[in-house]
Image 1 (tube, helix red, strand yellow):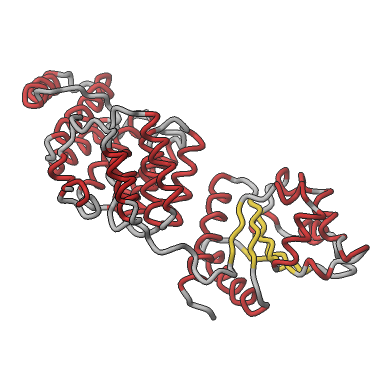
Image 2: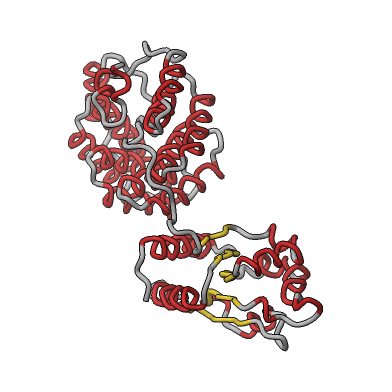
Length: 392
C-alpha cells in the first residue's frame, strides 16, 4: 500500500472531512481526482481501515452501463454507518455514456436531505464530464481533493510561527495588575461558600487567572482555573464551564501543552459548539502540534460562526503561512487587521510572510504604515525567528 507523503496527507484530508460530517450529522460530498486504478485501490483500502476505527463501513459502489443510478445502490445499504466510495462514472450508459452524471444532477438534493457521506472518485476526464453534464451537482460538492499532484501543498513560505495574542474569556482592563489581583483574591475569600455563590466564585477564578496570564504566571493561572471548575462541578452551568475550559486551554497552549489543551477544547464543543474561540483554539493547537489539515478545517468552522473575529482571521493566516499558501495568508492577515486595527500583530505577521517570500521591499513599505507605538514588546518580536527584518 502507498505510504508517500502526498498520498498520506490526501487520505488525512478525506478522513478529516468525513469526521466533521459525522460529528455534525451532516452530508458530505467529496470529489477525489485520481490517475490510476492502483491509486483508487490503495486509497479505498486505507480509508476502509481508518473508518473501521471510527465505527464506519466503506461501501464501494461502481457505475456500470446497467447500473447508472448509484442512488439505487446507496438506498439498499446501511446509510447510518456507511461512507460510500463511488467510481467508474465513465462506464455509465445512455447517450455519451453520461446517464450516471445526469442522474446525479436530477437527484442532487437526495444526498443532502438524506445526509449521505460519499467520496466520488473521478479521473480528470470524468471530472470534466461531471461538471458539463451535472453542473448543479458539481456545485453541491463540499471539497475537491487532488491525488494527482506530486505534492499535497507547497513548501512553507514562512520560516516563522505566526504571532498571536490572548483573547481572554473575561474582559480585563487592568494596568495595575498587583492591585487588581489582590482585590479579587480578597473578594474570593470573602464570598460565601454556599451553593448559591458557586458561579460567582467560578467567575472570579476566571478573572484572577486572566491577571496571572498577563503576568505570565501560567502555573498559578492553571491552578485557579481548576479551582473554579471545582466550584461548579455539582452545577449544570455549561456556559460558565465552557468559559473556564477555554481559559484552561489558553493557559496550556502558553505552556506548550497542546494535546492537553486539545482535550479540554473538545469538552467545550460537547457543551456548546458555538462557544466563541473554541474552534480557533482547536485550530491553533492543531497547527502548533503539526496537524495542518485539521487546523484548516477547524478555523473554517470558526469563521463560519464568527466571520468578524480578528483572532480567527489571524490564526487562519498563520495556518495558510504554515501551508505555504502565501497569498491566502496575506489576505487573511489583512482581514484581521481591518477588523481590529488596534491590534498590530496581524500586520506584523503579514510583513513576516512577505519578507520570507523574498518580498522584503513590500514588507518594509507596509511596515512604515503601522503604528509601532502600540502596546507590544517589539524588541522581543525582533528576536523571534522570521521577524529579523524588523531590525533593518
